[in-house]
Length: 201
Image (cartoon, rainbow, N blue to C red; front, side, top):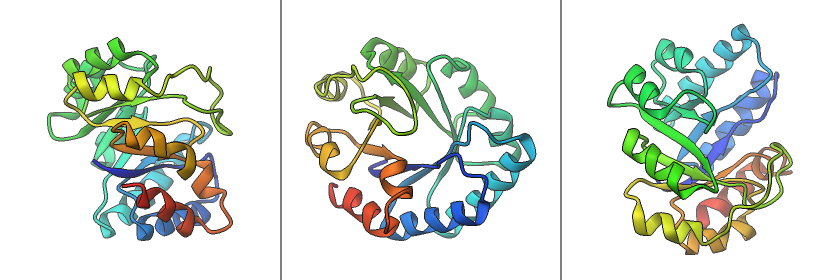
């Protein structure tokens, strides 16, 4: 797990979603997360199924945000849970030992340690910068990446207002993956925007 981690936007237009995701994959995105907070069950299943097929064709894993039942139904590659969602240990028990389980840890190193102990495959810290998508306190210090790399043995993901420029100091501190949404999907050229992130690694 190293490189650009593309998280999908809240788009109902499945064709547009697939087109932008395909550009990011062609540019070298390492991991895709399907996240659509406003979708109903039918649209969520349709989009996740189409994205999974796209990711399989490109040899990249697809992680589903929050919806464990959908992950298991589609046999997606993994699940991402927030700090207030189902506990990591419970999710790991549901999806089995071979799936990716990611955990949001915000700016809390102790939460990350507990997530690792409970079976997380990676931990995500943030927000580091103001986000166009998700509203949260921008209180995560950059040096938490150094602390995490010194004390954890799972990959470290950084998220929150990421651009290729402001992700660079976090990658230099050891971040394994940079999670991005707007800076790729809303770029005039998503392929080139994704390539800028890939070039950091």
